[in-house]
Length: 132
Length: 132
Image (cartoon, rainbow over all chains, first blue to last red; front, side, top):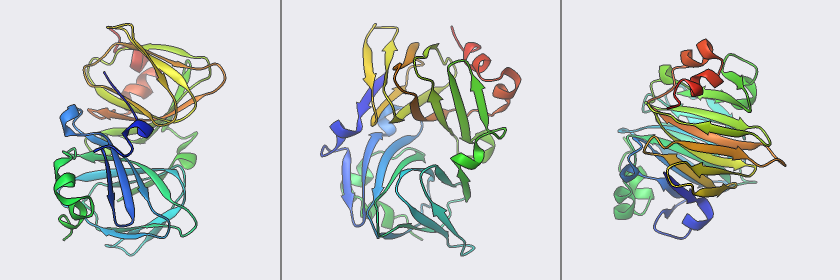
């Protein structure tokens, strides 16, 4: 059994910072769960174009508001506490946090993030490297 | 891309109720993510002995307080918002919500729950069937 705490993991090597977001990797590939689990905060007003080509990801909103734009269709879905979106088709998308608040989310990646991509690249690169 | 909402999913077939807990299955096996994702509420004062023999599971506390007892060691870990535990070794455990509050959690199962176990068994059976 693994037990960890978000506040204890903050400001350790589990906590990565990038342009417009930061993420605490609570479970990584090495934990052997077959997925990784992160608490990721999108900073107020940030606009993040993303495209995970090699992972599926789900994102559940715990706190704050924003939106996700599906680049394939142009549709924009509002995000509020209780919204979940799943990138089940490696969907190219733009994630936005409203200017008034951070957007706090729980994220699950399959296959799991190893953590080393992040260390090598300091967060933003891990995303950019996967952009189309 | 899949977009769903906790409040819209409440009181639909996604929402299962059992003795001491209820769960909204936001992502199931059929969504093709390789994991399932649930928002599960442990009711105030509930004490739930559990043993998932065929799944690994992680549980992240969004709201409320309680504890998890590792039956192998007798250790009791407090749970509060920000705590995550992972049953990476099919750990037999007892989950408790404090009497003062519900315990609201985000749960990830691998392999994913199909939903049909739950329908057949109305929730508690799905857990009991997996007890040692």
